[in-house]
Every structure is written in C-alpha cells, then in structure tokens.
Image 1 (cartoon, rainbow, N blue to C red):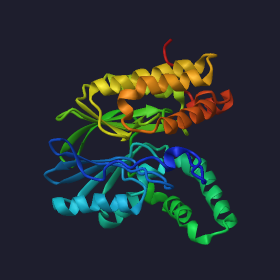
Image 2 (cartoon, rainbow, N blue to C red):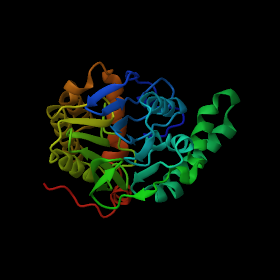
Image 3 (spheres, rainbow, N blue to C red):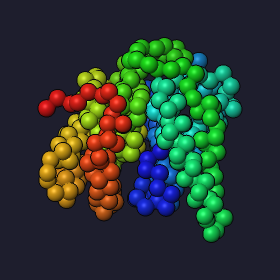
Image 4 (cartoon, one colour):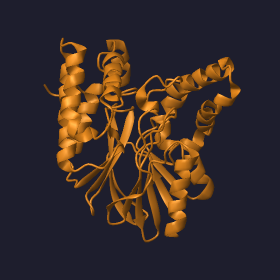
Length: 325
C-alpha cells in the first residue's frame, strides 16, 4: 500500500515503472513485476508457481490491470489458480484477490490474520481520508483512483484469508511444497514470506523493497530481525515485494544498507548523513533510480518511522523483541 498520501507528495507515485514483461525466476516459477507509474498508487510484485494441477500466486497486486495479467497467465498456461498466498495486507498485494476469487471460486487464500485489525484501524482511517478527499475535490473526474481504492477496501472478506498462517510451517499446496514463514510486527503485524525448497526461490514480500524500505506501517526494529531471518534461508534467488529479483550477494548488500540506516537513525547523527549513507550502501541496487527520489523517501521515513515518537513505534512493534546490539 505504501504511504497513503492522497496528493502523492512522495515519489512513490512518480517513479519509473518496472518492465511489464514476465520474468522467469526458476523452473516453474515466473514473476509478474509490479509497477510504479506517475500519479498512481503502485502494484506489488506477483510470483506464480506452476504445478501439474494448477497455479499458486504470491500476492495479487492492486489494480485491475495487474490482476488481469495474472488471470491471462493462467489462461495461457491452461491451469487453474488453486491458491493465493498474501505476504501482508497492504492493498498493492491483496487488491487482486476479489477478481481471482470471481474467476476461480475454489481458490484458497493463505495469509496471516493481521488484516482483521487493519480493516478496523489503518484501512478504516484511510477510507475516511479518501471519502473526505472525494467530497472536497473540485474536479470530480480526477477522483476515480480514490473511488477504486474504496472499492478494494469495501470488498471486505474477499480480501481475507481462508487459511490463517499463525506460525512458520511447511505446507503442500497444489502438489508443491512451500515453507511459509511468519514474521510478527515487521512490515505489518503479520508478514508471510515463502521459501520453495526445490528451486531455492524465496518470495520476501515487503520485507525487501527498493529503492528504500517502505516503513509506513512497520516496526523498524523487528524488520531488522526479519532480514536476519531471511539471511538464514538457503535461497538462490530472492524476489522482493517491490524491485527486481536479487542474488544472495545483492540481498546481503540490502541487509547491510538497512542495518546501517537503522543504526544511523538510532544515533544523534544529522539526517543528511543517514540519507547519504543509504544511497551509498544501496547504490549497487538502485540502478537508474533518481537520487532525488531516494533522498525524499529516506528523509520522510527518518522523520515518520525510524525516528518516530516512541508511542507510535511501541504501537507498531507490539511485543516484538529488540534486535541484538
């Protein structure tokens, strides 16, 4: 979902789009990349696992066009969508659930139960903001994206899991084995990342995002712990929630950049030092991303997340443990 600023003040709504082409990840695994386009909320990455009996989809994007690409993939593969795994409840990762359910009524959705509180808290507040923005808009023709956001939220239980992941576990889904890991109070109150042992592919959800960590609903301390958990997995390729697939070396560069940013934010160093540090550490991963865009995001997250008031962090972190010093 990322930062829900209706005016798209952050560059999340103005960055460049990833390629819309399907990206092969491993045998039987393909990536449908998410997109960032100007003045539009993003779609997260979707990973599709093929099995002899059907497809398992990791995250379903936000917009109708992204969901349609998933459905078109299934049609071309001539395989039904048997299951959806949602990494977390942000709209850019669950927004396609209702459309997939409509075409495949027997689909099973796996996710944590964190959407329950989000629907009555964060998403309820967001819906109210959207309604207020629509009411105050001078040009009604420009309000459709906000109405689309409301429509996703109003899908209600079509967004919810059928199977709640309440602990780390191995499951056989559509004749393929997956290790579903649950992280508590990292990006959200409950985040699921997936390891597929046969190909050593790992779908990290928003525990890994580029060009910066998207910290809007996150506990920064436990995000650090979650990255350490990812590092213990024997993966060959890691697919982030936003951004291009990573090798282990690239992930370790990301983890180091996050650790350094977290440490800098916890210190008394000037904000500019922390911003420049992230850009220097993450430079090999940023490609052609505009440095001004990256700076604006890190600047925002330092003020509103990493150096947020203790009361806000305590609420987001719940009972999450503190990372080792």
